[in-house]
Structures are given as structure tokens and as C-alpha cells.
Image (cartoon, rainbow, N blue to C red; front, side):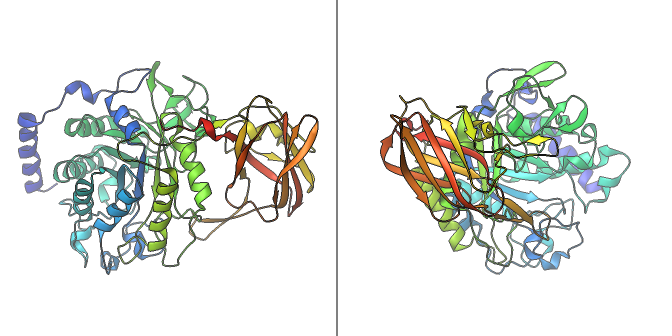
Length: 506
């Protein structure tokens, strides 16, 4: 650290102690079985737009190591106002901006590095522009910041405090120059032992600026205290079973995994239990790319986006959808249209609770199948399709097969959503993928008064998520899915039979 930077820190520290209106108790995460104020505000926001943009955008890659020349950052029509305007029009409540990814490139003019926009051909302070646009359009502002900086020399120093100080300096810049920051999303912690990340210092720093800023680190939770044995969010169905890997944290992250519908909120640290909601991250792109690519890629289907919205925001959890600008510096028109159409379909209203799905009358109901695949000591049982997890799945042992879900004949339904398991081909960047359906033709029957009635025939693949809406309500003792044509063994993650009359706002 040079002399001027040291002097600047001292001056700022004195000012902060004199004028900062913060409660010292806000710097401590307290054991609780209900949300604190920061968590309440996060839950109320509920739905945000993630924005990946930076040096990687101009190299057609997801991760880089800090070696891409800063001169390569050259957006031709940079327009952060458009990003936030799209977010507002799509019904998002906040914007979460990638301010610094693992490559170390900063979207603001940082005094602590030359690897930033101020040293590039296009010097606009993107963090400032997004922050100001959020204020203009009435959205809250959140930031992502990587704990792993592949450019900064102090990251490799044997004394971890040197890099911790570097992060504190940069976070101080972000929290003092860009308005109120509602959430800090930290990533890249896997490159260091958690005790060397300085999280207690970062947490205290952030809470000093905004006690209600929600703070978390990706891969928040472990299944054994003190051991880096991870547990997927879809297995978090018991309170006080799993442990913090990164403490303190105000909420759970596991990018890009999804929670179970029976998600629990209590997690342990040093024998004490803490309340933690979950924030999901998904991509608008059906290829799962985070930074935009030069090639125009397809977006997720509107049906899949709608069902994932309901799934992710249920049970006091949150969702951010990544909508990345391209090399021009704008969000592409077709992707902007997709999220705006989603907001329109959902009927999101400003200052109103987020919309909810209907009642899942199939939840945890018994299921039988014509056959079940058993391989390598694992059995892909039919019960998986109603267990509330998108990680488990049923697989048939035969190409032609069927499933039968028992129903309470008193319950009615007018919607079915099916998440089919799909084969995934990993693309060269190590992140993006292409998903391929196995099921090609099928029909659905309902058993009523001992008689089978066919209520739907599908003559093409299910796509990313098949949603069937009926103009009338049905009731019966069973629902049967008959698979009449498939390439490969049919496999399904989840079938939801839904009563939309139970749909409500909040």
C-alpha cells in the first residue's frame, strides 16, 4: 500500500466513526428462528435481475485469469440505463451487478488496480451508471464481488490479511460512492480456506455502511461442520442438520442449484441455530451462459421461466435471473422481450406481493410405474416425481412405459407441469450446455369412476418444461402418463398437478 492510500484510509476511518449512523449490534449475525430486518427486506424484494458484464464479454468466455488486455473491453454502445429500464419493465424489484468477477476486472474506477474501466478505451463508470439508473427507476441496487482475484498479486501472499485489506478497500469504494447497496453477493471462496477470507471483517465493514444489506457467500452451507463436504439445496429438508461453511452470512447461495419445495431455514454454527432464506440464480439463456456470447443463443421457454419463478420464490426464498448485455453494451432485444413477457404473464405489480402458483394436489402422493431403472447400485424410483425435488428423478427400464399418480378424488386440477429429465451436452466453455429430450410422444389420462379419460395428447417433445393448462377442472383417483415414443429410457424429475383456483398473490 502506498503512502497516499494509507492516508486516505485513515481519513476515511475517522469520518466514518464520526458520522456513520450504524448500530454496532447490526454487525453481528444473531441466532434466530425468524428473519431479521435485512432478511425481511430481502424476502420482500424477492425477484431481481442479475447482470454479468465485463472483460469476459469481449472474449466469448465465462471465466478468465486476468490476462485479457484491458484494451479488449470496448463496448460500442454502452447503455446501463437500458439495462435497468428493462429490469423495471419486466417487474424485477432489484438489480444485482457483477462489479468484479474472478478475473479482477472492475466495472468502476478503483484506486487499487489499473485493471478497470478507467484504464480501458471506454471509461464509463458502469457501477455508478447502474446505481443511478436504479434510483431513477425505483429499483434497489445489489452487487456481486469475487473473493478470488486472479489479477491481484496480494491474493497469493502468504499473509491472507494483505488481500483481505485489498478487498476492504475496494468494498469501501463501492459502499461509499454508489448509494445504498441492498445486497452483497460474494463468490470464489473455494480458492482459500474459509478462515482466510476475512468474512467477519467484511461483514462488519458492510453492516457499518448499511445494517440492512443482505450478505452471503456462494456455497454457504456444508453437511459437516468444519469439513468441505457439500450438500445440495434440494436436500436441505431438515432444520438444524447442516452447517455454515461461510459465517457470517445472511442467506444461502448455491449457484445455480434449486431448493426443494420443502426447503428449511435453520442452519448451525458453533452449536447455535440461524435463520437463512435462499436466493436462486438462473439464466435467461437455455444454454446456461452467464456472460453474453457473440453468437445469438436461444432463451428459455416462457413456460419454464414461469414455473421456475414460482418454484424459486416460494417459501420466502428469492430469485435472480441473469440477463447479460452483449458486446455493444446493451441487452439484446429478444432477451429483453422474454423477461418482459414473463413479467406480463406473471402479473407482477409494483409494491404488491409476488404471485404464487396454485395448490400442488400431487405433492408427495404415491406413484407407481410400469418399470424402474436400476443401475450401478441406484434405483430411479417413481416416487421421485412427486417428492418436490428437481434433482431426483424416475427412470423407466423400458422405452414404452407409464406412470400412475394417486389422487384424492375430492381435489380438482386444471394445470399440469412436467419437468422431464434431459440429456445434457457440455459445451467448450465448461459452463454452457445443450439439453435434449428423450420423450417424443405421450398422452395423459385421468381415472374417474373406474373409467379412463384421455385429457391430453402430446405429439412432440416436452421441451424444457411442459405446462398444460385446461379450460375445465378435472377430478379423479389417478392420473396416468403414458409414454408412447421415446429415444432412450424415459426419465422425469417432477410432475406437478395443480389447482389454479388456489393461486393467490402473496
